[in-house]
Structures are given as structure tokens and as C-alpha cells.
Length: 283
Length: 148
Image 1 (cartoon, one colour):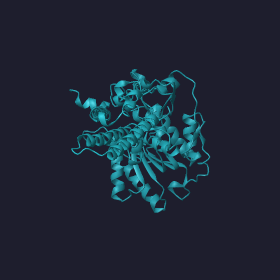
Image 2: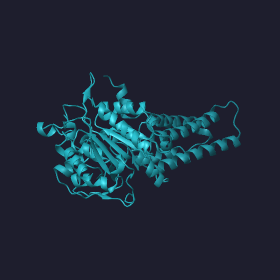
Image 3: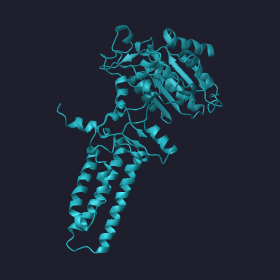
Image 4: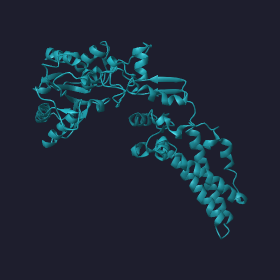
């Protein structure tokens, strides 16, 4: 067995490697096609692509190659397509869907399952006895949306936005949960690097850094916590949030409790709006 | 990738497996399966053989038969260790002469006796160079020396 990243599989030090029987590419939906081609140099007899095309695609930084959210309108070169996306979504190739998930409480899993996976997701038997955090107040429900009418701001020389009011609410929620005696791991997820910084600062000022991870959606893929707090930041749906796969990642990181913050009045379009409505209904 | 490697190593501790990556980013528990560490381990064994032969061939005082036999035994042990490693981690194409894995080449290394110390030393030195150079054979290293 050889463990290697797609890019490292192009190393000269592997140039005399024997042909391999099986090439297994993990997180294949998150790698661009060109990267997936590199290990083909090992002449595999069989290739298994494992991944979730309903979650984030490969990261493409160049705006020329992938202006976020504009690829379909402008007919870009689809550079962020993964080989998995092309085979499954564009060419409708037969595939096997792994339907058992081992992270979320079934009630948290339900909405993304219905919305993105045709209701096919099943919760693994190890997760089924999982309890919701049944304390009074904030963590009482599997998931909840709190409408915060804040202002999205930008710093000079930066395109990344932050929302101080939302960040303050995030800090207060964390504080409240800890005061309730809930010591479970908490994750805070936001689409913007600037907001991540503001939230980290506010938590730090209140000495609330223990057992908490604050990160962007893109950094969170594949990871999760007992309690997840999502800070949407924007009061309108931007191209960044129209990307349903990003939203799917954001809301599927929680194990026991999912708390979302944003402006409910204006987040009424696209998938986020449907989720907000569903959260209200569930409440 | 490190998570996958770590879990597989826990599940199948005796299975031949190699982890390829930037050495400084590989955690301590995965160092035993790191490709660079593996190259270094083979190179170190060749260097030790080299040192043993150098000692025997350059010693001003003629070594005793007992000392020669002891050193030859050590050399054979090290060669056997290297051979087992090459057989276990049989990922590379032994037919590629450029890579130095050819079985014929390796068998010649067992052909050591008092009369051919010096020839043998040059052969071993070539292998040491070959193995020490392997960890440098990566894309990044080449990119560093390319003109802008």
C-alpha cells in the first residue's frame, strides 16, 4: 500500500514504481480533474473514486478559471470540476452511493438528506442512540436558526467580510452553553476568513477558547463537532452562499446540535431560505 | 492522507506500506512508514557496511582472521536486512537499472572477501550515493534549482 497525495504522486522519486492493481482516490469529488490524472502514471488496473459530489469541489483560486458562482452563466472552462463530478453528474455513469452516515443525529441529518441526497441517507447504528443536548434554552432543539440583523463590513484592502453583531451573538451563545455546563466540543463555521478572525478575537477576550474550533467552511470539510454554530455573515444571499455544496458542508458538521445565525428576512431565497423555513417549522 | 495511513497501520501493522510526503510534516508515529525514512534507513545500512569495509581495508595493522570474520558476519546481516526490506517493500520496478534495484546487482554485493575489499568499497559507495540521492529526487527539489 502506498499512501500519497495526488500531487505528490507526480514525484520523480516514484518514477520507477511498479504498476498498481488498484488506485483508490479518497475525497475524489474535491480534487480537480487534472490532479486526479497524476496517479494514472501508476497504470492501475482498477480505479475507485470515493467522495461526495454534493460537497465542496476542488479549490480554484484563479478568478479567470473559476469566478465563484459564475461558471454556469459565463461558460467557464469548468476547471473546478472533479473527475467524479464529470462521471456522475455530466455523464450519468453508474455508481454506488454509500448511504450510511456516522456523524449527525438523525434529526440533523434529515434536511440535508432530503434536500441533497434524495432522502437516502441512513444514520449508522452507532449513532442512533445519540442524545440531543437536552438542556433548556439554546441547545434544546436539534437545530435552530437565530435571526440577527447585523451589518456586513469590509476592512481596507480586503474582500473578506465580517459582521460584528453576529460575532457577538456567537460569543454569547458559546458563553451561555458553557454556563449551562455543556462541555462538549463546539465548532464555529463561517464562510469568511475575516469573520473567523473577529469571532476568534471575541471568544479569546472572554477566555472561551477551550474545546472550540473556529474555521471557514472550506477548512471544515471532513471534520465536525458535537455542537456547531454557523455564522452566515451576509444579510443577502451572495454568489458564495448560492453554492449549495458549501451550505451542505456547513450544516452537516454537527453531531448533536446545529445553531445557525443570519438575517432571516433576507435569506429567503435559494437553499438557505428553505433551511430557515424548515428550522422555524421544526421549532 | 495521514489519517488514512495511521488507521491502516493500526489495522494492519505488518502489511507493507509506504507514506510519501514532505518529511517534516509527517508525524513521529508515521515515520516508520515514511518513504524518505525508508530511503535513509537503507542508505544508513549501506554506510555502515561502507564503514566496516573501510576499517578493514585501511587499517594499518593487519586485521585478525577473527576480526575479518566478525565484520563479514555483520556485513551479511546488514545486507540481509536490506534484502528483506527490498523484498517486503516491493513497490519499485526491479528491472530499472537506473534505480539500482536489480537483483543481479544486489547479489553481487554478497560477493565479498578479503581480496576484493577495495573493489567492493567502490561498489558500496556507489550504492550509498544512489540511496542518499533518492530523498532528493522529488518535484520540489527540482523546482528549486530551475531558473525563474
